[in-house]
Amino acid sequence: MYPLVVDYRTRIRAFIDRIKVDPALIVRTNSLSTQLWGELDHLMQVLTREMATSAEDGPQLVFVLKVLPGAAPPPT
Image (cartoon, rainbow, N blue to C red; front, side):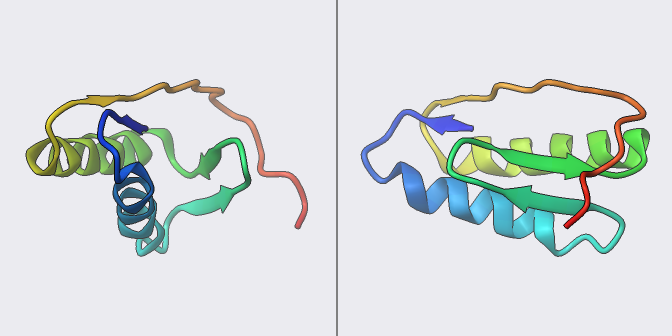
């Protein structure tokens, strides 16, 4: 998620925090990306909902998404 605003970090953090509350998803972040694991249909529903929520809050957003169906999360 790339909010095209000065205060981009706050909006990114809010997006990630909303996704993290879903117990059916594994969410891992690092300095370059946020990685999500879960059942594909459910994951896409959550992303769709949260992308819409973010779009209501901000002027303009860019989302970049890569989908790797069947990929297991790396060990912690």
